[in-house]
Amino acid sequence: MTDATIMLRRNVKHTLRNPGAVIMTIAMPVLLLLLFVGVFAGALNVGGGDYIDYLVPGILLMTVGYGSTATALAVNRDMTEGIINRFRTMAISRASVLTGHVVGSTVRTLVGCVLVVGVALLMGFRPTGDAVRWLGVVGLLALLTLALTWLGVAVGLLAKTAEGANPFILVVQVLPFLSSAFASPETMSTPVRWFAAHEPFTPITDTLRGLLLGTDVDDSLVAVAWCVGLALAGYLWARVLFRRDPS
Amino acid sequence: MTSAIAVTGLRKSFGDKVVLDGIDLDVREGTTFALLGPNGAGKTTAVRILSTLIGGDGGQATVAGHDLVREPDAVRAAIGVTGQFSAVDNLLTGEENLVLMADLHRVGRAEGRRRVAELLGRFDLTEAAGKPASTYSGGMRRRLDLAMTLVGDPRVIFLDEPTTGLDPRSRRTMWDIIRDLVRGGVTIFLTTQYLEEADELADRIAVLDNGKLVAEGTADELKRSIPGGHVRLRFADTARLDAAARAFADASRDDEALTLQVPGNGGVLALRALLDRLEQAGIEVDDLSVHTPDLDDVFFALTAKGVAR
Image 1 (cartoon, each protein chain N blue to C red):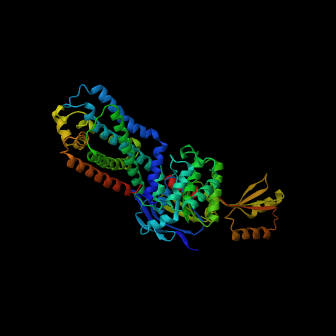
Image 2: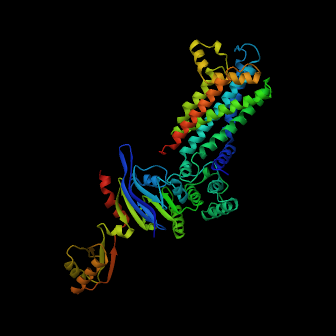
Image 3: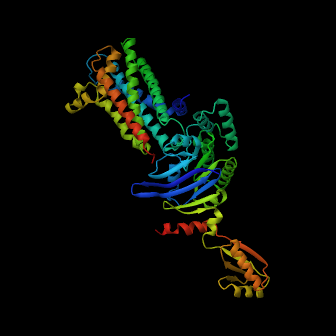
């Protein structure tokens, strides 16, 4: 067993011990799903098709976002509770504790995504993609989770207290609203439309939507590039932060 | 005997603030060394550097025979650290915390189980083993913390203020545990602000003040090094007390108790000279006791400048 596996097991135990945090990361997207389908569906014009079919990719994005904020808080708790200093003074792989967080979180988030899709199917979501496209969905979601999770880890390392992670939580929760996740950018004001066209969540949502609904996936390369870029940035940032002397 | 910890010229600054200003230490294997000092003296920083948690700015150090900078992993494999703030996983139970350590030390499943059970029993945690560490009292957390440190059988253990914030009973328990460890051949590097603790546990004590070592030695050496000691002589009657008071002009007398306090360090030579003078003067003494200053006196005398600054 490697150090990272042991840390992953610790992470899984945390998750099972503290189911509230997991439920929250799934409950919030489901709540948004209900809210948008029940309240805004009639008012939002997304150009044909059921609104729920349009909405689910955005909700999946939110699920990944919430998952990464849970990671940021978990990493921050580790860093501020003293246990990390014990790990740092043991002859173990230094990065193992972070690897445990990232792998654990990615699995947790993907499980959350499956549950959210299940709820959506019950509510009338009718995806039309084939098996290959579903694989694409899983792959892109995994990549996105990896990206946001590494960023979450970095934020958790950077923040001196749990409150310090708030800006990150705000960003990952607001950015999807300023993308094609909930409404078509064409209906937005010019500056917002410009922003939506250039932020990472629009191509990612569009690609997910294309894969789920069997429509075009022209933005897939851009989406993958954003995910890889963000994952790399988050990983390198986290590495630099973790190598600093603890204060 | 070889050195478990050898430090020369250790320096560390945070920004403009010099926290350690050239520290030299030598801790022999199998002994207890106490680093004593007021809050903010640099004790914790010294432990953090020696336990590879942070880097020093200058100087050299070896721990368990390994260079701190060149072989940090070899140092880590030989040490255990129990810090001022508990390093336990609050979401895990006491037992799971210990199993986590056993796993990380690769002690093997059967041996791990045996060691965990043994430590739970030894630290009086068997009953609470299945409860999350977050529900533990301060004393229990500290015991769990130290138990986790011991899972890997460290040869050198750093204890940063191990009894700060504990009630007297928990403190006694902790002291007993520490004495047991030393009997088992472990080297203990202890920081404390309690003089009594250093006096109880340490073979050698160094006093740290404002980043500098201001004294080093055994508890007795330190006590003798500062003024405040005296020899108390008790006499059978006032006539003998009068005679003795004439012989020792610098002494202070207590007529009611029939005693005379003669300033002195209580060393063998001084004591012999004192007895010689009494004999020459033909004064018979009922009782004699030597009073050395306690570590409190030492502490205040040595760190007073720091307080005044």
